[in-house]
Image (cartoon, rainbow, N blue to C red; front, top):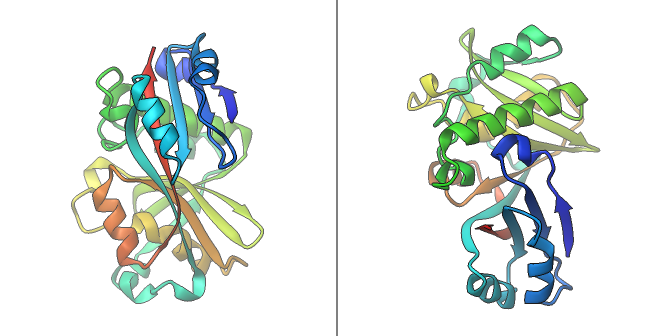
Length: 242
């Protein structure tokens, strides 16, 4: 098991947080779990599929399964651009590389924008804390330059953002969002489609897109299905307030 002291979450959640990632080779041990979480106030355990001993054992310890994370992907040659043809010509992307542009993104983040996030859904946290967590996450990524933060623009209006990394010929969509005032207007498909649209518009040497989505966000799951993304891996996420 990989055990991480998530020191950054103290600023985000006001709780000392530990995250445990279970490997396929691991065997459930209540003693090890209890020892690993003993100095923390909030624990997250991520369990691969087909490991029922962890699912049952964690439940008996008071953990709750709050979501299933689904890793999905698609190859560029399988991406059906005809499904976004009505949006393609009016959509553009701008790399954020200065503080003013960065501020224009975070100033648009509002509580409730990520309403299906596990932090938003947790009654001990809620939408305000979830929003703060995303702002801090974007700030960290922007300042460290570990990722690329990109504005999504439709008909000359800044409607959302995406945070991406590239690894060889693969683009990894880490986080994205459509601002609340533009939700419910038929633009949701830009959420899964923007990385591939960005690749095509900039003639990048990328052949695959991957990302992770939550089972809690059924509308987004449907959008990825509509664009024929393939399910690559599933992980159960258990949480406990200590």
